[in-house]
Image 1: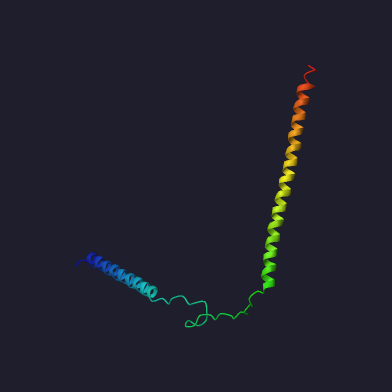
Image 2 (image 1 turned 60 degrees about the vertical axis):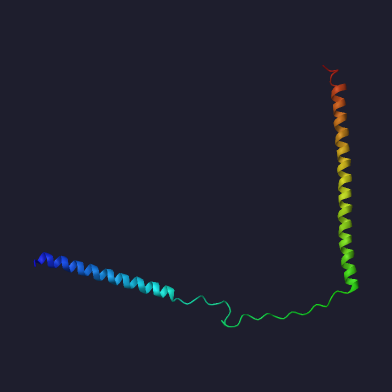
Length: 117
């Protein structure tokens, strides 16, 4: 064997060892990833979920309270109806004013401005 062949054989052997080490390292990484612990729950004990806090029981509403609630909803509805009626009346009054002003302006243009020319 020549010294050149010995050197090439040594390089091949080292490359093979390097590949084996890289493969083992990658396998260890994959095993660690597989056997990783699952994320811990947000509450301290994994067996028991958080307890619900008790709330005070509300008694059922009385007849007066139910009538009062119905009366307030009817009052709100009537207030909205009155506001809509007032808005429609104001809008119709403004529309009448605009129409009358437009007709007056048109009459002025037709009757009085043609005489000056």
